[in-house]
Image 1 (cartoon, helix red, strand yellow):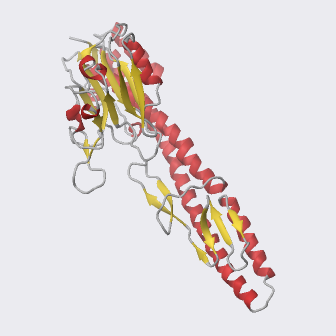
Image 2: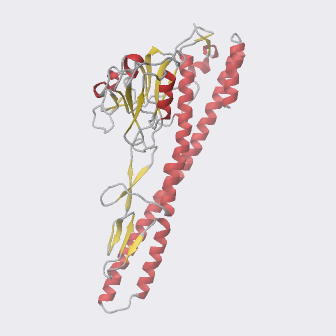
Image 3: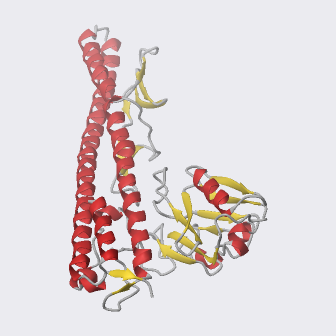
Amino acid sequence: NMDKFWESWQELSIHPENQASRQAVVTRGESLTDSINQRYESLQGINTLLNGDIDATIKQVNNYANQIAALNGEIVRSKGMGDNPNDLLDQRDNLVDKLSKLVNITRSDRDDDEFMVHVDGRVLVQGGIARGFDLKTVVDNNGNSQLVWKETGDNAVVRGGQLGALIELRDTDVRNEMQSLNTMTMNFADLVNDVHRNAVGANGTTGLDFFTEHPFVENVNGNYDVNGDGLMDHSYVFRFTGTNRLNAQEQIGLEGTMTFSAPSGTVNVAYHSTDTVADVVSRINDSNGEVKAYLDRNNNLVLKATTAQAQENPDFVIRHVEDSGMFLTGYAGILNGSGAAGAYDFNRADAVNNLAGAQFAVTPMVNPSAYITVNPAIKSDVMSVAAGFT
């Protein structure tokens, strides 16, 4: 579908006066977005099934833990009465064996009166007390809940066993597939829209996106109330475009260090006077930063957020950009000033005020692959499909 979509654009470039060529672009665009939507629905369906399995497994773990704790009490009482609790011990061993298939556990029966079961170094069962697990809703996590300890609310780590395998499948395998799909969708749509907005249709229409874009927030500056207290406290921005045209092969003649958000903390990217613009762009892209760089068709520097590796961080949100020198400031025209004082940080509202007039785009709604479609305005009038620049 992707190849056919590009082929339709090539055909339109050869026959820009042909309405049928424009219709082909729209039709193949719809076919492409339908296939993307269907792929998302398939992954989301798997995710939903896994959530159900995780929930059921947690309930079973808690059930076994409660039964083991109850048996611990019975065993202590039986021993105290001078009885031989072999049947009870066998029942407990059977439950512990079943529990071990669901989560990796260690057992301790050094104290006859306080049999214990640990998960990841923390106590699940201690004598007659069972602590158990629960699920906590996490904002902006694709509807997935976080496993926590019921008693404290602390995040729980489960490795191995059926529960660990289910969580890894959901939070690693399916999440990575979904992030890859969303990354392809977001960057593809953003690039097509950027060109299409600046081009002109046969009916004179310009400034029109080819694909629909749904911002995460309606606020034009990307301001967002993360904690729900009614006050804007973060800035959700996806892309910066510098104001200055650059030459990829030009030596920059500048020294400094850029700092970008990374999966954990930040990453530094140094640049030197003998570097070309292309060298600096490559170094940004080769770093561990969760931002990518390129020169657009006008040779302006573009910084785009990627998906986030850590679940607690939002996808397609530029979280931190800083430059100790002048490359991102006076040279590229993105930041308004150097150093910490001139840095962009998403942990405050109106963070875009630290940009030097750079264009910016608000972060898209979660999972763009779920809703991408051809713009209805273009579907209703195919002559709006752009085929050239003014």
